[in-house]
Length: 291
Image (cartoon, rainbow, N blue to C red; front, top):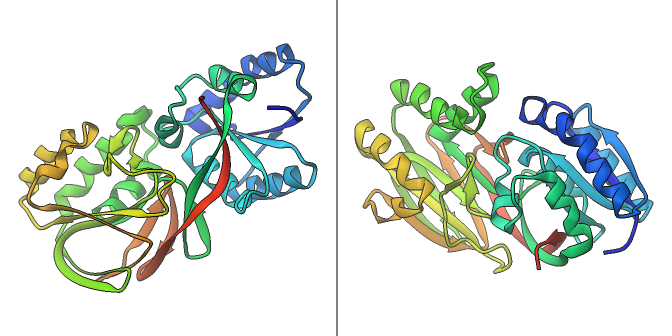
């Protein structure tokens, strides 16, 4: 794939991992003989501004950080306005995992020469786009705890968040509309999935496709706390869907609400307060992926 690169780096991603690996990525781009410039982000909005500027300059946008940075940048490239290269530098790197890109950002940079362009779906809620999974309920508490902790736990930060959140959790009553079909239930969470992977390799919707124009909706109904915790390891294998409290449905537009306030998180960041509507944007994003 030809063209200059704007390398957008979150210097805080992965507790500084992205910044530590940046020199090796720069060396790889030089070895390719590829023109590039490096921009360090100061905020999510700054990352979006950088992505818009790169599009205006007809540059390939390489996002080096976690899923939050990748999602923010991707939203500015929708409707095919630019091409996104993903260089994993954060804790989870779940979207890269779904695309088949390994955890090494140097190897990911090589895909600029050896990979191929692919069209994938985005999802949108509250005027913001996301790549992975938007969820609310106990997941709201888990994400808040994960963001607030100063413990250096890597991908285990999400497991830590669950263990902290479960102690004070009480069930919520949910209303869910999928393409106009309404249902209600009591339980833990609603998750609307584009890629189907979050939390550092948790396959909440293991068969979710990035290019089918649909969203996978996973709900977890009321069960004991012990049963919920026992099911957690199964999410890493995708076998949790066999549990009777877990339901998966698919649709193009999803609206959901609860009987108490929740903030919905996506790609590791708060994105919308409930009630919220999520819709799929089919094939709107151009990404660099393995052949």
